[in-house]
Length: 405
Image (cartoon, rainbow, N blue to C red):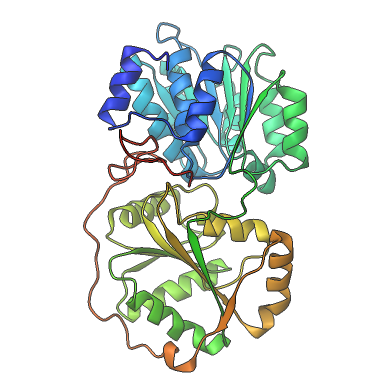
């Protein structure tokens, strides 16, 4: 690819040399200035698909915002910014991160110093525009990442308001796992003759994920969860609950039983959420009990198992939960509990997904558990960038095969 020496050096430091399918199809088109619609599931390496061109197309000598990346959640904003910064820093480009749940002052100061690339959530980005601390008149490239999730989370109006503050001449890149009504309309309205890149866009769940669906009585669920956690060895596990209160209670029960568990739910402060994610990534707390907040956009390498302790409310949420495992060509396992009072909801999820699952009964004897067999902690591991790691980067090394997951 026609990349600068600085970009090549940055990729080499990441031990990256060969593009994944979404990157191979996307980067040349973006470098050529084309508007683009990219359909690919999370974990396919799409962050680098736009991060590399952003670093190439922005000018460090111009102290104004030239690229804006909008993402639906704080956690995703942090992850995307870390990838963008890895490519932008060697080009002497400044990256600023905008998201809610923290003071506006540091963001004001960073914007005042001059940031060529801004990564932000729609709500906080719009706050800065209204306060006059962010000027998007110089934007050359605008990226809408996880556009369908922004629709699901009610950001459609904010995104439209932000788009109106950017030049009509800008290049627009839209990435989305699916193309529901608003996303398709946005593409038609705001993208100019876009090229469409689709990589595994029609798959509801990664093919590398094995599904285990169990019919179970409600009073057997905790014991069954203990059995699964006892069998996890050193694996990372996300356990999904339905409510904030339920997640908090379940995490406390697991800790009391001796499991290295933590809770991620919407009532946590931003600092507490970031600390929890750091502990999970490093292996300090390898069992994460979470509400659907962790299903939206989080890209973490090495999650071996997802457990749906409570069913989600829709097939789309089921897909996003399951998508936390089986990534970048790795295998994963998704366990789902279905209690008698959830039968109707499960039928609706299956109907919405348009696929069949083999279901088994959870045997009473399997639900017996006495706590962890032994204290289990994984070797400390850090995930440097979204969609990449030292074990399986978003681009593959020579001689390896880059999976689409």
